[in-house]
Length: 265
Image (tube, rainbow, N blue to C red; front, side, top):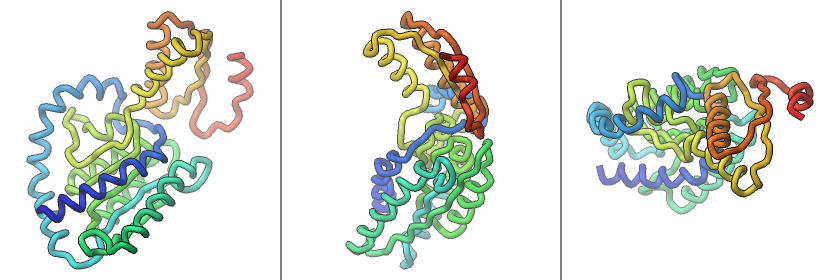
């Protein structure tokens, strides 16, 4: 048990590295605000969630302690296409980190087998992330890092918590760490703040530090999080006394924004 806890504590050190590649995505079954409303009761129910996963976790710990082979750590990232930077940056940093770890003798004298998967699906597609997570879990991975998309992150979180596998996503939706019933997922640790917290800070900065300028909002409508973020910014900014002069939208695959920008201008 002590050895496994040491492994997981070292894995958690990867949170800061993974956070460098974090981006916003969609939530997996509702709005961020809905999850926020359930956060309070969820905290009180976290113990029961942890207890229900206890048997699986204990089995995983015993398996890891008794194994003499490599320690498998997985990474799920958007590592190709237009948003490749969100996956490649943390992937390369982690590859460099684990090379240093292995050169120094690994963890507990065991080499780290770092396995990466490109899961760059768009339009809410989470099948690639689910398939990759299942492969890692079946291979005996002790931790899965990523993804940065919240739709995929929520799906992977469900699998990891069912299997008792440590999950550290850079997804920014609260629904990655809180399930549909309002319970905190005991094995998932988000590596950054929720989207709406960041947007509220942005709105406050715009009003207070930028001199309360007139603001127009351009936001994406395919993913739930981006709609919530636009609403959070608007509510915060107008609540402070600011003025939103116009709004325009686009979809995730759009590449031409001339009409929206002309309208806003």
